[in-house]
Image 1 (spheres, one colour):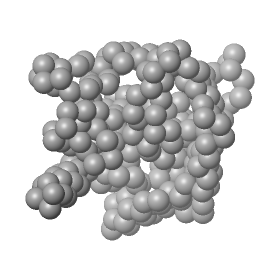
Image 2 (spheres, rainbow, N blue to C red):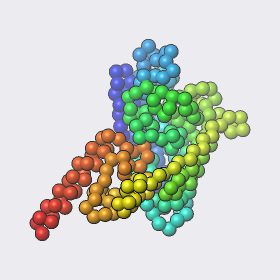
Image 3 (spheres, rainbow, N blue to C red):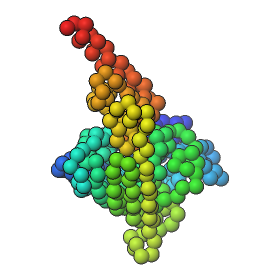
Length: 263
């Protein structure tokens, strides 16, 4: 759950249910609410100066169904890699090569064109043209969600994902056109995962370009700790998380030193 308050806007999201149905399947149900107005009703601004402004104020701030989706993971390799748990991905480990299929109501920018600081409007108080690129348009209703199916192939070095999504009957409308032969949105994205050369030379375990660590932020090399952007999976990195990583790693190092001193 998170909430953002500004001078005239408010929003919050609650993940009502997160369930790991089986080892390779999970589901998500998310209730959202957003309301308020921008200065001068934000009229005349292509890039609103407040991301929480609702483009259709007549919708009000009553709670609504933001996301409801299921995910099926098809294993294509015997080994697993560590995965960052998020409200949209619950498994702590995933096959190193896999096929993921998602279907339901979701936000396209939850999975496409991700960046660490601008992919979730509720986490940032900034201009619309900064969030997810000003010229990037995608299938979404006035609240930013759509009904879609996404198929993704993921490996250590690269991933590719494709989505077929419903379009609203009018631009920024709240009602969807369910006739795919008449209108639909399609997204195709290739994601490369370069491996940090220095980390590899040091012998650190790396997956998708990120250094792998345990719960204490220790790498596969005893006594070597890592945190921040070099370990954080896509859309989960932030300055706050990096600072927290440093605190947790320092606490783990302190415990390790105390244990050795006591021995």
